[in-house]
Amino acid sequence: MVVRSGNNKSARATLPRVAPNRPNELVGERMLNKWIIALLGLFLLSSACADESANAQSRASNTGPEVIRERLTQARPDLPVGEIRESPIEGLYQVQLTGGPVLYVTPAGDMMIANGELLAIGPGGFSRVEDPHLVEKRRQTLAELDPAEAITFKPEGETKAVVYVFTDVDCGFCRRLHQQMDTYEDNRQQLPGYRDLGIEIRYLAYARAGMGTASANKLITAWCSEDQQSAMDELKHLRSVASQSCDDHPVAEHLALGVELGVSGTPALLLPDGRMVAGYVPPTDLAAILELN
Image (cartoon, rainbow, N blue to C red):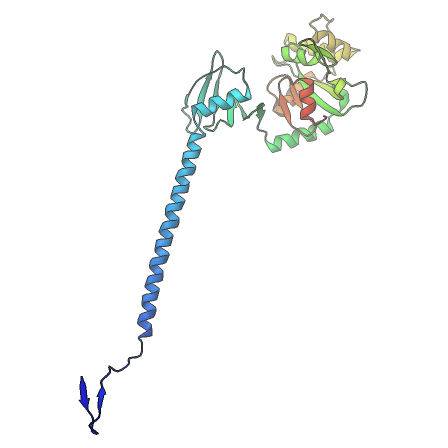
């Protein structure tokens, strides 16, 4: 559109310039930012859910009956693992050993309850999950225990470690342990015994059948004999020993002490740091546990 000015010169009309509405622009920017943040949050949430789903699938693939069977077999190839099914206890599987007891195992196959004990399942076998308070109590008790109360079998050379063993003369694995005190033969090989490896064995009495039984009386005989080591050696080799009795034997006290320290069977090996190894352990394996190698 052309308008005439007073001086009759023509000029092009232009729209007046309007100052930008800065507040409105800021509102728009803020709304856009909010949408970006919201979309980013949804993306992160979906990623987290995807990761969690992947982790759950991974955990699921590493749990269950087949994993449990594999872990138990790795720990003990000779273990007769039978049926595995969910147990009445939520979160645990029930494993029936063929011709044996029932184990209660975690879905990942890394822990189990057997004979009232909590055990860790590892590639090399089972190990007790120890109560730190009880471990410390054992350590202090052994440190304060009078060695004269034990029947001791010392190495001829240097003693590198002392292990207290709760024993019963009528226990088959206790006899095996004793028969490997010195060099012994296994599969036509001569292997070092406990004493050969510098391990001093100190026996404490643990009459599994209780006081007043034949087993308890045999232990009393060993502790009341003039030559305690010879009497114990004879009894461990199933040889007859004349019955002995005395008023100051510690057999009943040892049994009570064993119960207090968590012993439930024999042999039970108490290490200097308070750990307990339940059952027979070959000499070289015990030396490895004691880190003597």
